[in-house]
Length: 630
Image 1: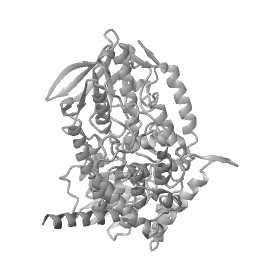
Image 2: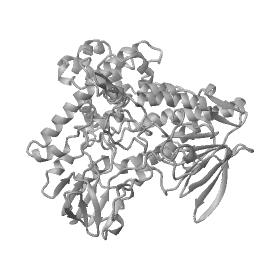
Image 3: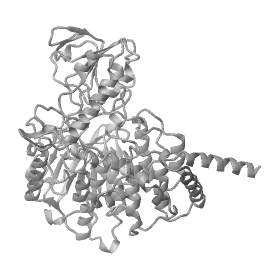
């Protein structure tokens, strides 16, 4: 009986391995020195590029030998990977990426895939080296706050995270509208120190992301460090004692607290943007913003107005359209949408097994995702010199053609819609969501796309500029966030009572590396000004870059015994001059383009113009030379 069970287990393992991506499997075995000559034999096929190579390209006998060696690798279980200094890694990286990878990317890719230990992932400071132990207060238990908490705990630095909501998650707690999910692949939208082999979908839904965050909290024992239902207010720096004073509103009472270091982890996407529509307050039905959606909202059988056509609209609209009497989508400007074949798919049984049972297979999968959807897309973001000045690049033109053909294919039988939905601005000039089913939704009999501007709202209708009344029962605002007005919910006062909101003129936030602001000692920002990604990668990559830098800076306080760290105005100004020069060359600043990245002055205040590898290098370690340390 035991032999029969073993036989069935072996048969199942063989079936799973035969369903693997053979190139990732070869890379996995090679990283343990176990692939023999398979990598050499498969190299010509692998270097066709990730998108163009297939398992069928490999000879059958090679695939058969690969299966046997992979089975032996799994059975062995205790194999040790090559040392990071082994020169063999270089060829494996190129093989997995399907192209020669520039040297400057290798360390970053290996760290991000957790194939190598992340350098400067702060180890606990030796007791003998600690001259003082700074206490840290973190505002917000979203991904930024949790990520920083892990780095600080690793460094042995005490901290408390204050979260206004009853649960962690930040924007993933607040946003729970139908269809809400991430449009970055799950296996890179996760911490490098907490890879998740059990994602249910290749692109996760909101509930699964919340579960992941809760799992990280428990895995790293952060729960004792978090105070839920605690709203931070009235933060001010006490120059005499060199400590931050702040108030906590919780359980109906206000209490006073202090800490050596204050960190904002509230991010950019925490205050809903409500459009100034004439008469909106006179509407007799319900008005709800996607970021304030409640499960009890009843849209079935109703006439629904969906205002906005960005990421949340693209997810919510197709989710509710089959249930409503009529959905009227009000589009201010058309939206480029990308297509990902796996977007709606659950993770294959084979991949779940491989991620769980073949050590490092998931790491190589993560690396190829990060390479494929990272800086390789950067050229489409940058404009190039043309006869009449800056223009979109040739790469951008190619992407425009690709996306236009996709829309044309989806709406081949609806030329009337084509005129409304094809944008006239370059791809990447606005955030590009994945098509959740938007174009299919637009063809439904109970859906109407309206591109005329909204003139006013009446008690039972939305009236457009052409005078037409669109009678509705429910208005859904899919209008995004006040992203450029950062930290407006947490008043921060630095030296001499200097107010951060006044320094930033309300919606023109600036910081060194998006992290530190002159005049605000011992104050750090996670997901701050000009740190949002607009060309690829994963926001969690940015979070880890910043968490590493902040932990390194606070560790510097601990090891030197200094009381204050404050970035110099000269360093901050120089950084922002360089940043602005690069921003001016991005398609975000193309003529006639409006987007939520811009503030009221037309400056890009949210997005980073750097390549991922540039920001990774800039934040790799804290540089005390740019700061006043006392």
